[in-house]
Length: 116
View 1 (cartoon, rainbow, N blue to C red):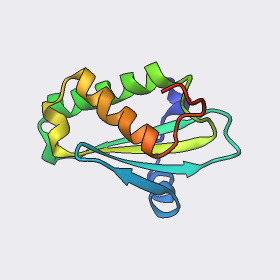
View 2 (view 1 turned 90 degrees about the vertical axis):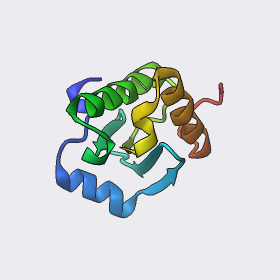
View 3 (view 1 turned 120 degrees about the vertical axis):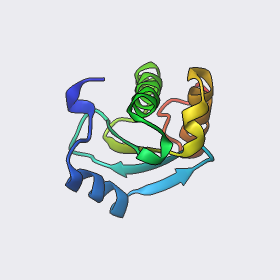
View 4 (view 1 turned 180 degrees about the vertical axis):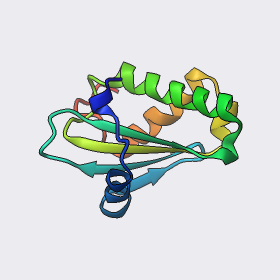
């Protein structure tokens, strides 16, 4: 994931929270906001301390980033995505994280090509 594809600033997070639409399952919440002026998509991750210690939180973030990296060709461009990890995500392995996120991607029509 390149630096320009990350959302870091609090005001960017707040904008997506306030204006974007959201969808959730038991493990994750995804907020999505159209950003027609950017040609790629950006992601922001929110993994709270409730999920676990720093090692656990970083592992969850790494797994989420990896899913986005693998799916980046299918994900719609020109949007900001914020992924909030919920408590059950700490116990998940990569395949469970991917399955859970892909499920949300399909529910939110995040895929630009319907190959799933």
